[in-house]
Image (spheres, rainbow, N blue to C red):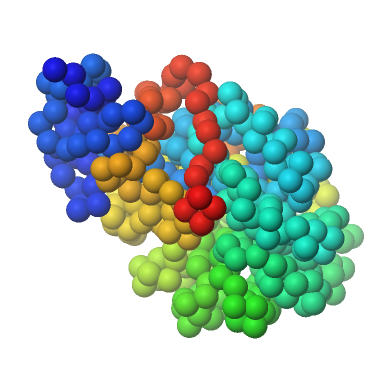
Length: 441
């Protein structure tokens, strides 16, 4: 008798109770049972020797559509995601036009349907002009929350004045994701690089104090507004000290690149390909981020995938744009850190699945449990592979990790029980649908 649509057999499954060698049965897109199930399925997939992790949620990507499709679009960005073992993505609002209205959000959802390889959600961008609309925007289906840029944005998405930051935080209930760089300090110091400079000066212009000032201001206003905030891509030791004392109101993200690269070596080797906001910093900051990961201060890891073409990136600094690719390399890079002993696999699962789900109130994702979506990132922890530009699906066609050999590689990507990537090949057609959130159900 067939009881399951599909059974994955022979692997080690990271359940809510920890790793178990068991079969995993899927019925109607959801996890249905564990045990000896291989005789009860229409389709049996042998994953002997592999490890089945909860589907990885990349909660910070920039897929550039609409308006900047020459760099990336929703199809190419999500194709790269599933090739890298990512099952869901939350996409940022700094597109053209920016995602600041209900019409813009619905347009993005319409563009993603039948083209997105992953499940997806979109951030509503905060601006001084749309504050009155934020509470309704954050409740729309397919919206992951509100994103606020305190620095490093242009046009209407920049929210730098204290009064506007407070207005945004007082408008709505869901967690606000925030880019913390102090715009006033950036403007004061722009002369350091404006006439041309070595790209390593990027980290001097956008120094640790620039980040710390913005994060300090954010926490003060978050308490005044009684609003939960999520601090994106934290890059400094100084901020981690501050954030560990504000765990009741602020959650914390770090990026693989800030855990992996360091100045000045990254700038010497990669030039402007290492340029991003906030910058790659010295090894002392990187070491502090790892300590915060070990101490539990960090809640999640996102890629901040922000592609630009090689032609754009090769412009002389500071005309070169900031941003690295990353959605496709998140899993291999972090598995390599696991194999190097820098964190446990259990901690990685928390950072890439349970953490994003907890922060944003995701419904039915984030762990392998009965009744949850059967989103699975199935990896070979022993596979030794070399990351290359040729493997990258992004329209940009490059990665800062080109030529880097890693241990640990995604073999299957499974979304709601459907295999969408197997052995470095996408499978079938794009099946992505909007992520559901418990706070908006």
